[in-house]
Image: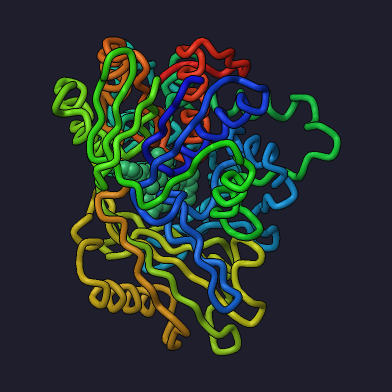
Length: 481
Ligand SMILES: Cc1cc2nc3c(=O)[nH]c(=O)nc-3n(C[C@H](O)[C@H](O)[C@H](O)COP(=O)(O)OP(=O)(O)OC[C@H]3O[C@@H](n4cnc5c(N)ncnc54)[C@H](O)[C@@H]3O)c2cc1C
């Protein structure tokens, strides 16, 4: 009987465990223990329920365009619990010059694909719009090297598109600074579009036409929503996965202190002093913590892992009584460009974005501070953060009402950053790993930060480990790191 140990019970480690569970169901002779250092599973995914509110401390949704999280939910029998965004007021705003400006219809990430909404929007000035239109005539960039998101947007669409659109979106999605963020690791499709079509606008239009003429989705498929969440919060995926993986030993409060090669296998030492043996190890902690476990015997991998930085953010969650709340909240929320010199980077109007997040007579908001552009704000004490956020919500949205509750959920050094040349760094780590047979690195630090990518990455690493152990991994996905 072969043994696999997974270190880290975030979504990547859990997806790896589920892949192994599937193989055990097919009678593969393998056992698996997942060791989680904290008292709960799920890592960054952490849903709280109180007084009828469903509160996400970390991620609140995932994108449907990358199918791996949806597929996992369907395998877990949670297909019916997938929830799209509300349809009444599907707009998101940019807070610009003291006003809420709707992100124009047809803006695909930051590239306009509809003429009229782009021409009439107040989001960009006329010189800004003309500069964006110049993309139609600009030559393509030569070479294949990575570049920063800021350099790419400035080059193709101009400074205004960067400041008013790309920067606040990247700050909202990745807590990143576009000046240092890798285009190749985060939005490789933009590189591909430029390569193929030269112009970003023409390329995105061509892709839109292609999608419009694609055959309809399968009968019975749910209507498309870009963002999905779970009926009972994202932790539902974690709880269900564990409940259905009866052959996996899930151990919480089991921090790993060290592990190393021993003969043909691995020896894993827990902080408690307990020692375990394994034929393969899937290390699915954040990269900075993985580095600490590897530095004694794989210093070059540890040094590369240390080059993957993390920044701090804090989410501030506020509940209100709907009857006493003046703002109409018609939309999903707003993002704030850095040039506006505000403390908050974004605010999600949670109870307007997804159904069932608050009782009917209540409102739930979630504002964010910190990220690569201003992470010190997230590292302040909770009372200061609360006070700053409430003041900004008063100034920006006119929220003067007393909240029913106001909680701060910090993620200190919790947001991984893909900096320029991240893809090269990951491929160097993969090359180094060849010397350590039976060791796999999984998680958000490597090939995608969002939940779907973490599911894919955990699944693929488990398949690779099963393959290495000579146990047939029948899924088409395979590979490492
Ligand atoms: C505030 C925030 C908001 C986000 N919002 C979204 C969103 O809306 N949508 C989206 O798709 N993505 C979002 N993300 C990104 C996504 O949530 C994460 O990238 C993903 O959940 C990370 O999963 P993971 O398994 O790689 O790592 P983690 O979730 O970090 O799990 C790693 C686990 O390893 C454990 N561990 C560490 N050291 C040890 C040790 N020595 N021994 C044992 N266990 C150990 C930790 O306790 C932890 O449980 C967000 C992230 C953050 C921080």
